[in-house]
Image (tube, rainbow, N blue to C red; front, side, top):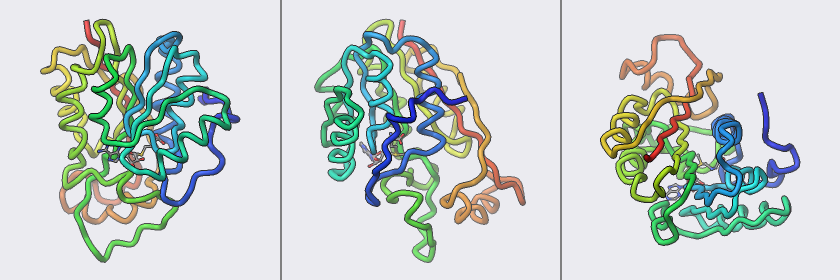
Amino acid sequence: MTTARSDLWPSNVPAEVYPPQEDSQLLIDTATESGILAQAGVADLCTGSGVVGIAAAAAGAGSVRAFDLCPHAVQAAKSNAAVAGVDVAVHLGPWTRAAEFGPYDVILSNPPYVPDFDDEREQIPPVAGPPLSYNGGFDGRSILDPLCQTVAEFLAPGGSFFLVHSEFSGVDRSLQQLRDAELDADVVARQAIPFGPVLTARAPWLERTRLLEPGRRTEELVVIRADKS
Ligand SMILES: C[S@@+](CC[C@H](N)C(=O)[O-])C[C@H]1O[C@@H](n2cnc3c(N)ncnc32)[C@H](O)[C@@H]1O
């Protein structure tokens, strides 16, 4: 199922920027199909090419702000929004900068979340995007932990947070952190996909850590929705 308009999918993403992938699409589809984007004040945390924020704007969001630590991503997101003909305010800085402009009705995020065992010999082809876009520290949670623990503070009453990540990054931990912050959190979408280049390179390590059954080369992506009352 694909709801993103093909003319909104950036065709020109520089090598320094995460090319939209299955996780981007699953997040867009889930948020769009929820029907809550129209007129909403939206934040796209870790925007990369801008694809998620652009889709939210195209779905009728009242305003969209996007944030990324990488200057190349900020430049690409601005240019992609202009090409798509939608209004997205793109800010350079960590996702925590979103606090300056909140609260938001809807927050969307596809952060770096892949467990990273810091092996210098590892060879991952550039098609995967830059390491900053996917590496999430040893357990994949260097951004997920603080994000799930604090995002409730960025949400307006009645607001919703949509987060995509891998099964290998601690789905139960995200749910628990969001619930501890008094959000009503559940997995609302799942998609099994073949390993891309990053997990293919890390599969032997994941097998050794027992996060991955020997020989399996698929992962499940999940989208978590967390609502503030
Ligand atoms: C997986 S990519 C997602 C890009 C885009 N949202 C998408 O779905 O295709 C993650 C993005 O997070 C950015 N990033 C990494 N650490 C960040 C941080 N602390 N604050 C904001 N952005 C960050 C990276 O530069 C990268 O563009």
